Image 1: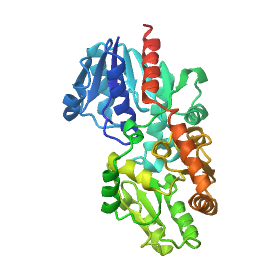
Image 2 (image 1 turned 90 degrees about the vertical axis):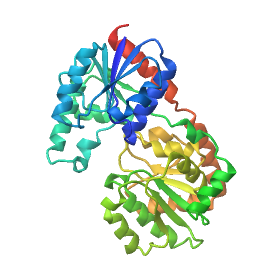
Image 3 (image 1 turned 135 degrees about the horizontal axis):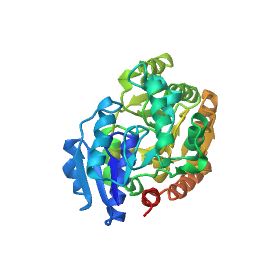
Image 4 (image 1 turned 180 degrees about the horizontal axis):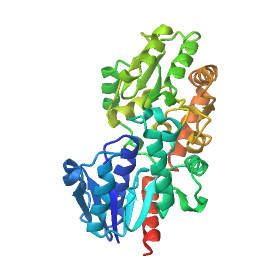
Length: 370
């Protein structure tokens, strides 16, 4: 069996994490079948080094472009692949053979303002409609996302397979005391702090988290800080304005991007991790935080209750008061905090990239009839 996978989003955050772990575990699990990987030229050598049965084909097509609609099917036809896997919703219309598509969420239909051009929502809907109807199998990452796909597109439920995401193993490995102290000193984390990790687009609800933190600060004067880790903060000035509106400029810190080894330490140092997102296809940060032993507060909407189970406090993400009260409870009740830490560590063990990729490999075989 020859399987083609479009890995051009290898370095993205959400989809990139999915692709990197898909490749890493296919390299471990399957030395029998051949994989043809469409990638940018600069990624070819490192990807081929993962396994002897990995072949790369360079492709510089832009995402969501006409060029990818033509060049990827042509390359798949020339490579004589049995299965083509699109790891996000753009499955080129002319793709030959058996097809698998992963649709992580329907965010581009719910929040079209995130797309880079005015006609983006129409393009996204058309591509998702085409992918859901043409693919032999649709993969998605949560039962919540499956419900969203079925709400937007008339496909048979049995055509959609839910395969959960998981976390990188490095989040399960305890850092050394020296590493912890280096991070503590570098970021001057001498006071207790609330942690948020993720991008800062409006649906992540970070502005309401800042409002909730302001409410909490009125009753907590022990030097408590809010640490926000997320890219592109400069694009969303409403967050800076919220900080100044609530006179929190000395108490809220925006750290931007940090590498995973640093993030692993920050999760462990946090008094509580808060993720009040309004919509998630899966939501990796709460799971990462739980694997690192942080008590977690997250939203009671979309996929998040499915991911965290009973191992986190669930709150109404539209209520600043509810978020503030949950933070106060975790930070002042050591029994509750310890309970959440223990439950979170156990819950994180339920998710495994190895199991998820093994199931994906089974689906390749099913659609190829081998």
